[in-house]
Image 1 (cartoon, rainbow, N blue to C red):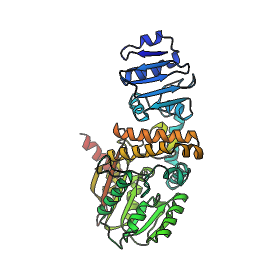
Image 2: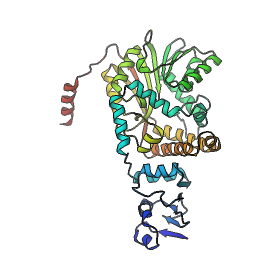
Image 3: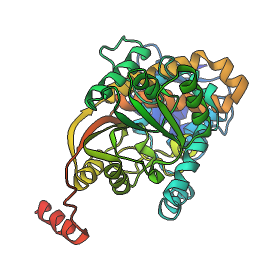
Length: 410
């Protein structure tokens, strides 16, 4: 039986004998104005909006969405298989802005205890190993095949390939850092060696830092096979002491794991020569620590947090690093995650066979949801280029900063 539910009147839906446990879902779908369907475990189809459905929620058990209707509850139902999302996963995420995102208290408590009391290098280790424990083959199944970046490419046009976008990312970094053969580059977070491959082949001496053993092994093999002028170190940047200052530093998508920007900026100052440049890019949010409950529970455990641009630039300036350029690259990240999600769906059989259905479903939500999140301006992406001055600071103390804050508010 198919029931069409008017978007401007929910009363008739109750008259059709739909159990009360589905009323919150009915209200959400009807008030969204989206053309969609919900299929109840009994087989009854509730249709909303005008025209063909853009997406369909198929509930397999009566308890699929029982209880408060939150983003985490919907994600949990999908990941555990009590609900499926059919037709367009991407369009289904248009519901997200209408659904509250209330992280459980236990999840928030765990985050803040780690943030406040666990040493940063230890927390970095925990976060990276928790996310990357699936192994190289998992991520290589959907990221670009040329430089293997797990961060966004730069697209010159929307229908460009992911591989070309990754190369443009490297071209811009190389130019922005004014690199030349023989110069010394520090790469914070080596990933799968894209920076090492590109810069090493152009005669730049690269020191690659990673705290992921799989990454260290992969990049070390890459360097040996291609005979690149690269040193790979299994070491946290926060503990790294160079023998001499570097000419440049690049950090792709790693600042999300270093929420203490003061410490980060101080370490960059210590590692760069005067006039040396930093190139950084990352996914971002306008409010620091604004990470959804789904991501905290299923994708990025620990103290992962999106880049907060205003906080980072302040610390860079306070620590003697002039901000040379800032670019909004949100659309580039939207396209990148769209490519990842498509490739991930193509690799479904391999993913499920090796890592299980729930892992596939969790990352499928993450990739499609990330792409739509950039489109919806729920998250952003930026690149930052900064240059070290001859002298640091001035960096005002807490009292002076407090006075300046009050002045700026008047």
